[in-house]
Length: 335
Ligand code: TYM
Image (cartoon, rainbow, N blue to C red; front, side, top):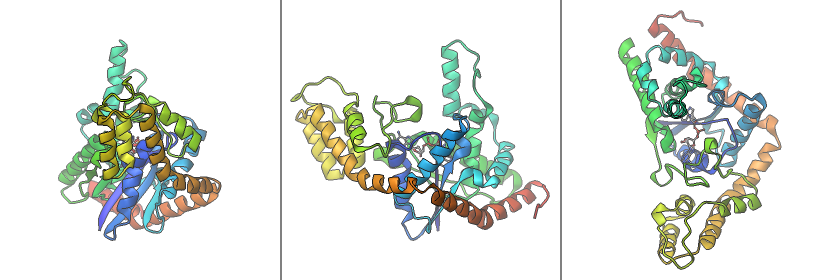
């Protein structure tokens, strides 16, 4: 079976970028008969930025409920919280000791922090915790521990998956075995990078997100606030340069997208384009939103599901692989 794996960092409320980049393709892929899927809440990753315990817990619940509301079937999919599987942190250390530091220097998130510091005349590493630097190694452990073949993600994560391949390959080479399968990123081109309200990538760090389950009225207001150029109604508009169009495309069929492209060429008013965008998003999200509210009212059920998922997953996958890896590197067998 093809193993599919992906995670979402629990550092905020799930947004439309998470939905189209990861949740929607991952849930669809998990329905194939020849798939075995591993979907999880990356709460260890969230500690790098969000050092607020209440927020981490709240976000974990919200993101778990979002996965379930979007159709994840816990009977078919391994569904768990990263921190419930301590083998992930143990593998992180084994990989840390084969990972080249020079590769981590080039990781986007770390480099962006260094570039910001340089622009402000600070020391390169001012305010940077070592967790940010090590982020790709923890992510590699997430992926390699379960020998994932495909990882559905948005484009911003591709570099991390390449690093996971690199660390896995080095480990295999150094210890002389096929311990890890090497993963591939699975990217849907039409939604690889969903723009946010201001046209930059939709991201918690830019504060430009549309929450996946915003109430209808809020969704309408947020869509109305998307930044556009100042072309008047009747003036032709460039679909490919428009974030309204890109968002529309992520929620519409090919025919609807083609019709919208013609409407842009014919000078559709921004207000009208946004109204149609709002209606498309709402049509897809409304039923999910309702399920989400129901799930959020029963946090203890979600908690039970996660604990149970991690317990079975450890017994079946994580503990046996770690035993093999400990032996490979020359550590004692704990069992
Ligand atoms: P995170 O939490 O930032 O994002 C979760 C997923 O959503 C995708 N995404 C987007 N896709 C398209 N357009 C956007 N604007 C957009 N914003 C976010 C991301 O690409 C991602 O797929 N490090 C990861 C979480 C993680 C992980 C893993 C993922 C931890 N371990 C192992 C895959 C495999 C992260 O912070 O994603």
